[in-house]
Length: 232
Image (tube, rainbow, N blue to C red):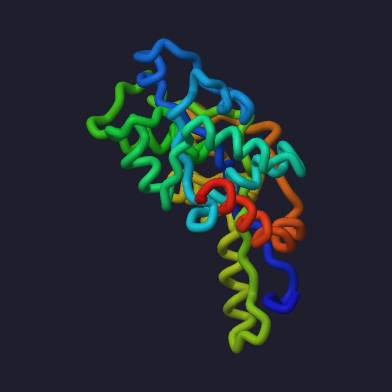
């Protein structure tokens, strides 16, 4: 690698997925979407808020999910999604805390994370009853897996100390902290997940993925194509 001394090491992973406001859907008397294709249905017109793929990590992940799902036909999917009045905002916080119905917006679907439901429970104010379900759900067939890595930069003056940091990031002590602090999954399979994840975070068994080399090679081209469709 031109950037790293050796290969970067995976530290954690998470899934970017469409989330939905359970109460808002109940009020409207409609079922939650499950798949990317479902989001094109006229019954879901004007219900989805997503993040700008050029300015937001989950926004980019959602774009990559559609590329993984539809291959070369992904622009056609986006044309239809735009026609169904998807709302595009700059950031995850804008989408989740401004446009999402859970926080006073008018969009009951939002691109967020498979681990957003446990976060909703943990940070609920006032606290939720112990046996209450999470207030949000996840469309489990819309997810794109993101893996985060750490590496030692080539040319560092402190290779030994850098390696100590990498070792700590993948240690059980640090990995145990990840779920309820960053709401991601530890890469260390020996780490026990907290009850909040077991109870409220759906297991995403078949997330969309793309080879990292493909993302690195084509990302700018994809973003340019996406911008022409979504931001015109």
